[in-house]
Length: 243
Ligand code: SF4
Image 1 (spheres, helix red, strand yellow):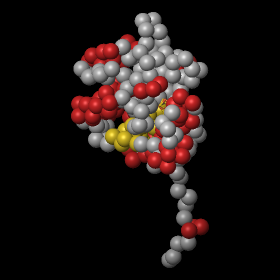
Image 2 (tube, helix red, strand yellow):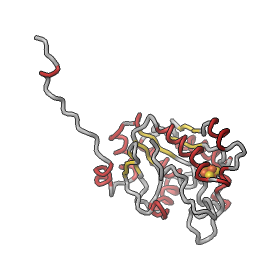
Image 3 (cartoon, helix red, strand yellow):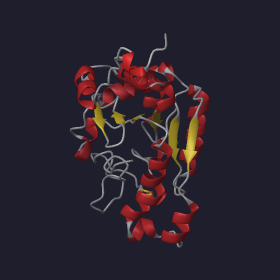
Image 4 (cartoon, helix red, strand yellow):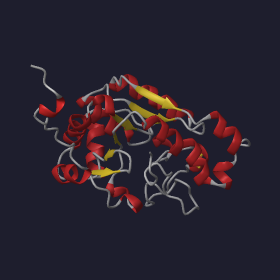
C-alpha cells in the first residue's frame, strides 16, 4: 500500500535551545564546559572561535584546543597589526596544534574606496573598524550558527554585564570567559606554560591595531591603551550585529 505524506505520523523535531535557556544552564559552568556545550548545540561545522591573538588570547585558545583543536578560528588581519601579533599567531598555532586558523583580510574594494590614504583610523576610527573588522567578520561568520570569543566581565565598560550566552541577532554567541577572573587567566598561562605575546614584555597589556594601541601605565585599566584619547572603547564586532 502506498503511504501518502499526510498519513505519516508527525516527526517530533525539538527546537534548539534559545540563548536565554543556554545562558541559564551554563551560568556557573567552566570555560571547557561552555565550549563543549556550544559544540553539542550547533556541531563543529557550525561553530567558530574569533581571536585577536592578543595578550590574553592564548588562554581561550588553549581551553578550546583541549576540547577540540579543529574548531575553526577566525583571525581578523586588518592590515594594521603589529608584526609581533602575526608571529604570535603562528607560534600559538604550532604550540597548541590549532588545525583550522583562518586569517581574514578586509575587502580590497572597501579599502581603495573608503581608505585610499590609510588615514581612516585617524579621521573616522569607527568607519575604519567597520571596513577592517566588522564587515570582514560578518562575511567570515556567514557559514556558522554560533561563535566563541574571549571577553571577560572584569574588563569593565561595555563588558561588565555580558552573559555567558547571548543572541547577537544572527547567531548564538558564547562567552566562555565571562565569569573568569584575571587570576584564573594567569593560572592557565602558568599551568599550561603558554607563551606570552611578544609585546607584553615592553609594556603593552592589550594589543590591537598599531595606530590605535599604546602602552598602559601602572594602575591604568588594561584596555586604557586602546584608542587612547578618544571616547571609543570597542571596535564594533561586539556591539554591532554580525548578520
Ligand atoms: S583598531 Fe584602529 S586601525 Fe584597527 S581597524 Fe579600528 S580604527 Fe582601524
